Image (cartoon, rainbow, N blue to C red; front, side, top):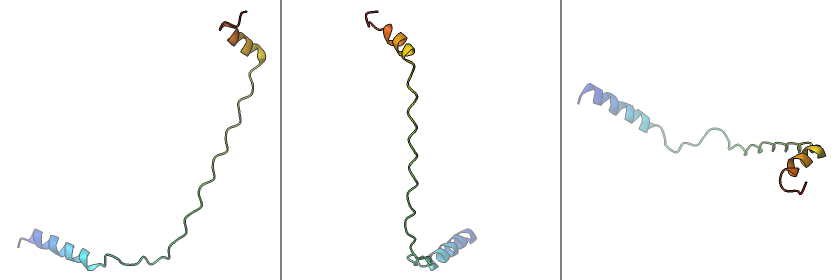
Length: 63
């Protein structure tokens, strides 16, 4: 057995020495509360009527 292979085998045996299903030392923690929902953005201020009239006036309102 080559030294490199011997080193790998010893490493694997060290890993397998630890129990796979060891219980975690900490008790189970409760789920953290969900983060608060972001507050919705306030609606934009209404446009002045003159801007709306000028905008919609270009689209066949009869003016």
